[in-house]
Length: 408
Image (cartoon, rainbow, N blue to C red; front, side):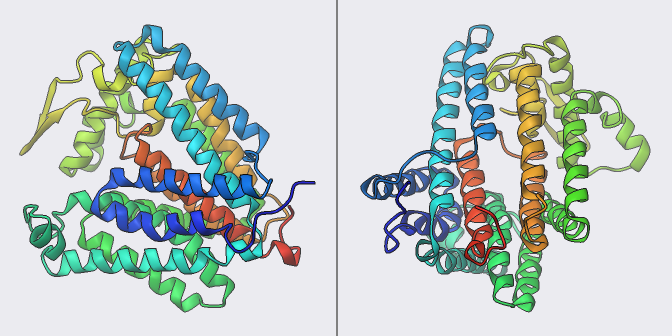
């Protein structure tokens, strides 16, 4: 039988991540990766010292991730830039291994190891939320006064969006821990404050993502397993239909005819997605190859609207499903779809208390909403953030395992 971690030190690596990552992203989003690597090294070293190490993320999910790495490598020969494709496949494998180490460490923590996490998580969350309010309310004393970045008016600190995105993922495990301690009023206040800062930052993608997560959490809390099955089915259908939507119901002209004026950022997204859909149709089975979004033919064509213009493909499609379809084709989309279905079915299993299932579903839907409208799916800091958030949720879900509410 595998020995457990040293309870005095087991949670230190993950506590470091919980406390530091939101603040680090506030300064520089890319710095999330070295913090995650350091935490993984600490967790791995402590686990090996205790004789308790092996990757443990569940065989089905592990198989899907391995197959995704293999297919990304297979796609390199037909990628427009083989060096970019090779680098992308290697980075993907490294990022997935990093996440697997963190997630495995989270799943192995005992009660003594978990005691490090809640204070660290709440500290990192509270500090970063306060800093975001300071930046918005006092015209950027840190960004402008200390870092010398330009002041662009209220809501103009777009470089802080990454930090805010991390907060809206971490609020779910944080709120579950507060809920355990019968602090419902604090949970409501935390969500209200996060929604307020997103509004002040005019980070509409983040605000919509948080609302989507909240709605999903309510549905899962009310209907539990049935809601999980419905979410899994809708996710699968969404992945299958994704290449068709931008050229039909989400076609820019169609949307304008239906709703009238569309905000410039959203209008630009619609044109990006339409272009991506057209390129997917050229190679729907094998895709264009790993990292092809960066060098896809025609990506520097300019699309223009009222008082705005931009490339039809600024590095990536700003939609994870479309990027997977574009670069890895139908096999990649199938793996992505199965992965999501397993996640939604897993977090709503019958033995999981409804509050736990609701929090996990809220986080998953918040992440999915962000994945559907911003950031490249292969960005290292973003993949690390998703793994860290999932790891912290795994720890929060296991808090009452010793009371028999959750099966091992």
